[in-house]
Image 1 (cartoon, one colour):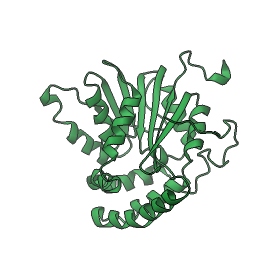
Image 2: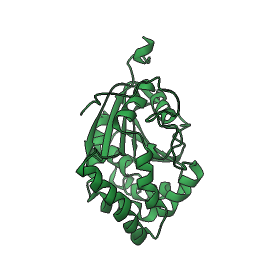
Image 3: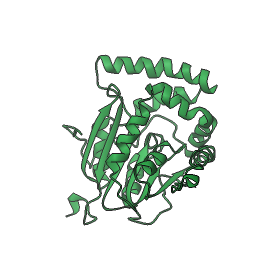
Length: 268
């Protein structure tokens, strides 16, 4: 995985470019929950269509980067319909995987998808209501935390990573799989046309929703670039932060580690 050559300083003031606070997009939690609840029945299908089916491959990489070991307790924050949660459960069958989300409709779909696991003698993830900005879990409760296509939709990105770091035990990893702005050039122009024109039209046809998939490209443009997101993770106290791009550079997986002594490098 790559490391950004010039990370945004951790001490950048609130509202500075790339710090994840001054975002010109309405990220009211109740509005976001209602929007995703409305598209929940076709959400997974749209993900497959938008990514050409590559989203499952990227989730597999994110799950492996979390590096769960047998018996671990693992959190998939903003679990949505449970795709990444179930990927983690499939990777580590003896792990206790927990998936919180704000959207009742998506949690219901996740529970339905996971319902067959106990009949096959497999542990089923626990899907619960929970807010990424105020996770209802104890400090250091999880061996690893993942978030897939969720952190872009919260109103306070630095706080989200601070919460994920808080509930991860020392030595554990925080893994973020998220859409991002493609690099400048031909790939960026292609991605802008695909996300700005094709995906909203596809979303309207497949889900009947004219808002959610118009929100998507706007939220991506307002989201910190890969270097800025790495800086936010470092400022939250995560170490050895690195990232790797996929999908013409328009998707990124970031990985950070909670220090073994529980202290960020600056405090040592």
